[in-house]
Length: 242
Ligand SMILES: NC(=O)c1ccc[n+]([C@@H]2O[C@H](COP(=O)([O-])OP(=O)(O)OC[C@H]3O[C@@H](n4cnc5c(N)ncnc54)[C@H](OP(=O)(O)O)[C@@H]3O)[C@@H](O)[C@H]2O)c1
Image 1 (cartoon, rainbow, N blue to C red):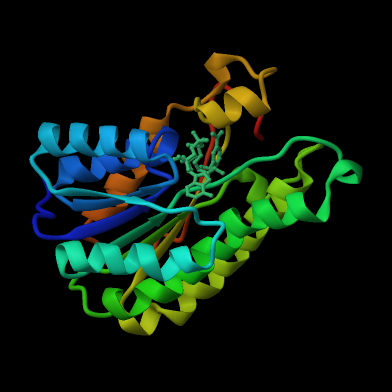
Image 2: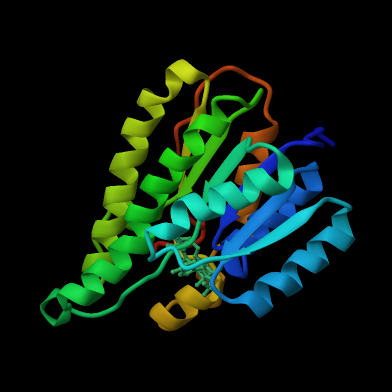
């Protein structure tokens, strides 16, 4: 097992789905965790479960990432609890389904706030602490919709294109500080989000959240110096997200 003991990861969107699978995988590697979501009850439950199963320290940080105040709050809560920050995983996200003609400015703002604006400014808040880390890493969870365009997903797709574009620039801007930046862009993953948004897609065409988490584990444990910027991940038996 790779040794990440005494290292700290901040994972947003960790109360369920992909973020929860990533949190569990990181706990298995030995990271102490700050886990972010809005639902206090879910977050406390999963934090207690992970802490007892993996013998790591887990701090639930309840925050709504659509609020600008949350960016500094979640980073400062993490650093207060653990003394630093080594890994940031921006995973929280919201989807939308419906024709672009039906989208209101308020809906557009709500989705961009969580999917694009929050990761941008959380990275900025985290930067001074990542600069102090011996192994600093940022992983942003975008989507295949950050490259492709699927009908009725205009705002979701636009927001993930924004996150994808930001991550490309970020990787270059923080390279001088030795911070590795990775973008993971999954196709359909079997979570509440996809079950609500794409009930037409068969279960056998979906990835499991643990498959995304496995990529994260690879990225945080590998020893090489080669850069792997982007993972575009879809189920090999599925053409739904080609
Ligand atoms: N599922 C897929 O097919 C798929 C494919 C590609 C990419 N992705 C991306 O992967 C990420 C995770 O998706 P998922 O499928 O795991 O979704 P999910 O099951 O709906 O989980 C979303 C997570 O984000 C949190 N969250 C949502 N809005 C938030 C807010 N305003 N403030 C703080 N936390 C918030 C949720 O917690 P609370 O509700 O408690 O706040 C939850 O922990 C998203 O960025 C999504 O776009 C998903």
